[in-house]
Image 1 (spheres, rainbow, N blue to C red):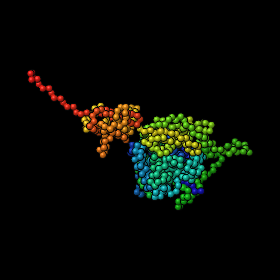
Image 2: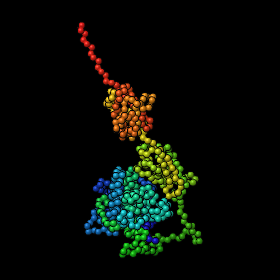
Image 3: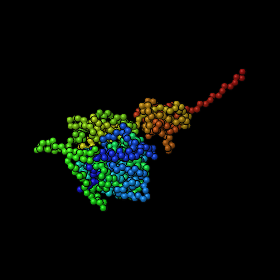
Image 4: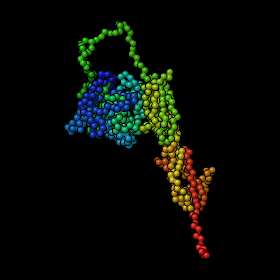
Length: 584
């Protein structure tokens, strides 16, 4: 069977140490400092203590390529041509389509989430570490990889155990999941993080435009600002929860910031070292169905020469320890190894963990959060289980950050707390469904209610008298301010009606009135809304020939009511001064 690109051997302590030593060696050889952008360089990028990541990740914490950027400046040399397996200045060459996808994703995120400050160089750094820039830019004209790029089967043997979540649709495996595509998303993450980056109506993890845009949104969730080092750390760790991975991505990020250039598709350099098998991996990994490059002959890795029994070990390795006699008596039947169940395997059901009533006005954040507990059949809490919260149905309510899906790992009490909900403008009932990632147990639905914006108090912004002569126009317009629990109530619907009396709310047929656009008389106004400051300024009022005191009643959603007096009276005429006393 053809080897998969990214088909990496199981990680062992020794090989992990090789990757860590390699990163440490480069850290020692490059002086720490601040780059031209004022950012901390990777040599100083030790994550702050609070920069811990969840057990969840975009890649399922799959292995990655550990090749380090060159020490020299990345500015390309005219005499150095790009090519597979090349080093030096060619390392800064990014295949044209791949580079375009990164820059397009940056532009999209700049508009969709400007506070994230996502640089395209971060996508390039992750793309380099995850797939060698889509395997050197081997993509078609639409940006889809020529062959699928698959990570190892996440079957729990040396890797995370993630059972199939996509029926093999993306990775061709209906038993376990594998990371897929140039940005190495696992199918369960792609199910909610996937994006259509090339506007072809599909979300394909094997397409560099789709994958780059999805990676950008993934890194920008949780309202992270990537211009802040601590939040940049969190975002990278959430992609692959490894400090070595963080340091390596920061190296490539700094490198690409100093200079990068475009190279033709298919001519980018390919990585040769991976986090699960250390140095010496083939620099031209293959994918299912891929052919061996011309002039090369595939073959097994050379085996180390056996050493004589009893040869003492040298410091740091290099020899074999003296053999020890077997501890199992001859003839003892061997016990076949068994794989212990994972926490996810033990989950029987989900239970509500004390979630209170969920309600919020349109546009407001919910002050309560959903809490779900994973339990065994016996009711015992299960920690370290991924619970996915999904907002379903026709609603614009989201989680904080604008996403409608969030995955949270249960804590030591078996509880996963969803991010805060942010109510949209659509009112009604919203359903949030909690499910266990990687296990087919019934989901748990939570109901949240979004009510219309409301005010509980109305007041005039001035106390000027509202008077008018018959047939005239009121000099002052009515302006009100709406509040709710003392805070500004913006966007609140209101109605203004000229009523017959304080006890009779029916519309009067005489006295003051508003004018419609066509000049017709109106004594009821609907569809009014307070502005961002909670203010509502009514149109001009006019008077017919009826004199007297009239009432204007304004009501809002939420029950706030204010009645304003309007006076229509003829102008007072001055009486003549008394004549002088002739006898005076």
